[in-house]
Image 1 (cartoon, rainbow, N blue to C red):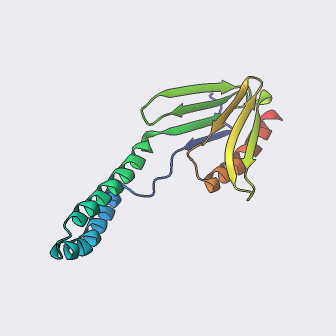
Image 2: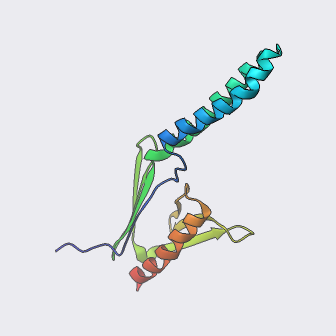
Length: 155
């Protein structure tokens, strides 16, 4: 019989737009940029059209660059005798760590406005930050469920 984990979570970066949403956003932005662009073109200020086109390209680049992080994730599994953390970057590079939960401390770092800025696993050998790509609210939610699970594993 296999034992089940005390806690398991798959942390992924937040995606505000899908590829279809990015295309729609770019189409709307390009359409709105074309309105003053045509007005400037008719007045003979044609370089403005090129500059507005560059704005559209920069927005497209920024939105697609943020979408490339979609393949990154962290898998955190807490067993009665082990804490396993598997981190996979957007390029597919994988790092796997395993700790004894009895020798691990979980630290929540907050800023002056009480927002969670970092989640750290502290060991004798150093510290490892988890969920770097999460929003402050997501970090707080993760901390609220992970900390009690780690405490139960130590008991």
